[in-house]
Image (cartoon, rainbow, N blue to C red; front, side, top):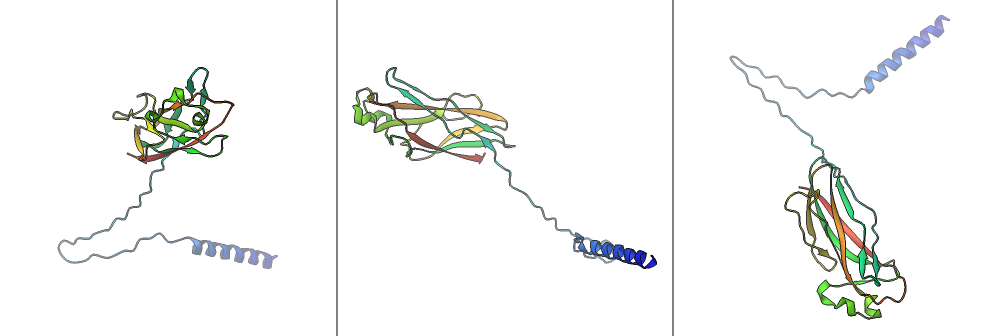
Length: 196
């Protein structure tokens, strides 16, 4: 029994020594300042700063509908909520036709066509699709009221959103009316979110 207790104690002592050896040393390198009268010493302070995480909530997809009989274009609002701890800029990086639908539109300038007179082939070929701020709600002063058309080659800074604030974008379009069947079409909208 004494041998068992000795082995147990030896095991405990070994574990204790191993656990002490496994603790990393956090002691700073030191220096000794010495002299007579008054002595000065300096300490270098090193900081470590992490980047702020940008977090923005927006829809994954948005659907639009063209109704040639009523001549209407409808789409839901595109809400953008800033979850970041500081204000962020919202930029439309690009808007462009994409494959995957039964039609792949060619994006054109809205003033380039007489939309109500397009024939069947041109109605299925051309669209002028744009995105813009719906109104001033949520956006900081100085936001853009301009429409970013799919033909616009450069990004458009829509504006900035404060933390816990939602701004709304809306789609707008010019299009033909002479569709002979039901079709689908896709576009890709890319945002850039940056700290102000």
